[in-house]
Image 1 (cartoon, one colour):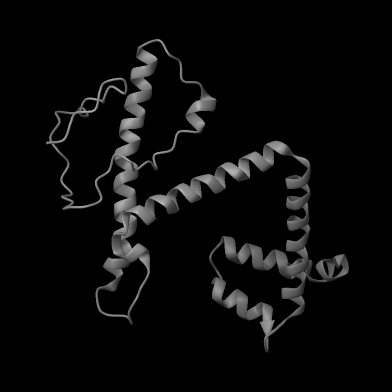
Image 2 (tube, one colour):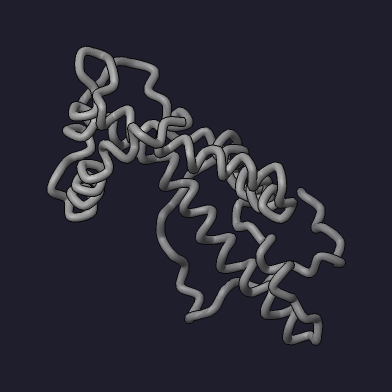
Length: 188
C-alpha cells in the first residue's frame, strides 16, 4: 500500500467523490480520467491504493468475526436461491441473448425479471399470511426466524402453461392457506 500516493492525490480524490455524489461527472468520464493509454494515472493509482485499504479491512473482518462470515454466507444463499428459481423458470432464455440483437429483444431480457418478481410477490403475500396465522394461533415467530424467511420458493409453482397477469378478485383477501398436515389431494 502506498499512503504517499493517496496523500498526494487526496484533494483530487475528494473533488471526484463530490462530483459523483452531485452527478457532475459520469462514471464513464471518471474511468477515462483514471487511465491513460491503458495505464493508471496518478489519480487512478491513488484510488486503487485507497480501495486496497478497505479490501484488507474486509478480509480481516471475514477472518476474525464469525457473525460477519455468517451474514455473508446468508447473503450468498439468498443470491443462490434467486438463481435457482431463475434456472427453474427458464423465462426469456434465463436473460441470455442467444442471437444478434433484433428489435424488441429487450422484452426477452425483461421476461425473466418479470416472472421472478411475480413469483416473489406472490410468495411474499402468502408467507406473510402464514406467519400471521401462526401468530394468531399462539405460536410466536421471532425476528431470527423472520430474518430467514425467503419468498424465493418454487416447489408449488407450475412453470408449464400460460401465465395470465390478472389479479384475481378475492374481495381484498388471499386464497385459503393449505393445511400442511392435511393429505394431498389425489390427481385424476
